[in-house]
Length: 375
Image 1 (cartoon, rainbow, N blue to C red):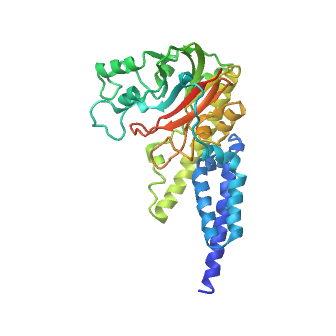
Image 2 (cartoon, rainbow, N blue to C red):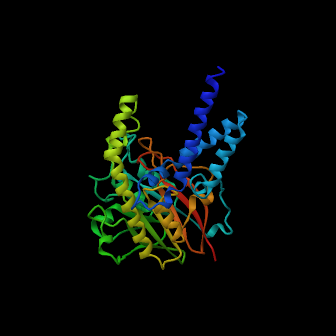
């Protein structure tokens, strides 16, 4: 024991130091342009879990009386706090100065209003959720035609009429294919604002549609521009997404590593690069618009390169300003990432609180923010 104990302790120190270094690399990975390097962007995806592991490791070293290692863990979290405050925020909901000037915005990648967990359930749980949500404005991604029974899970005239009654104002993009993917439901008048990009190449996404649309809601005379976006996906197959869950031993780990390196990793890199272009195009096209809410399926996490582009453009993120602790909005294949975002900017908007709903019909959870319109 006299010989083994120091060796074990040395190994644990080495493992801990490696963890701290990787955690810091993840915290600053979003500062590296994915056009040149992919690994830092991949590390950012794991930052919440690395931070939690670092915290637990630091507490363990503290309880064992190893103050230097505990201090190293604390230093790691301190140095990475600039990013961690957006990933694992320590904030709380705020009170409104005037409740009559508040409104709720929800974003939801509804996966064509299907039901991935209870396909045999009667009715349509997703549409019922929308009707009962009470949100004032709902930005939907991966949507279909409400009037097409072949595209809506358990479609019925009564169900759609109930949705229309709850949300009498609806808008979609003027582009035909694109309009099927992004829609806005609203209790207030809302219209689509056609936008022309400076670069014709920015008009395409996966070869057939742009990834965002601009709308304007009229909230009791307050005209609020809203961007509904669905940024470039990683385009992973279900088999590729199951790589992590398939690891059962050394052999399966080797197979998963090869699949990640040669099939998944290149897709991740391409998605990071295309998403950065998506965001840059959106920012430059709407640079003169304020106030402005931009929300939807961002397909990237807080702290990423694309996320930092939004923050550098003057956008604030409603979640870290009003919430305590990390969350996830993607819910399948163990990829529990926070990839649906609600950004805003402008002196007349104040985020009061956010809520992640738990309905599991889609592979995304809806996320909602309450705002106050300031004088």
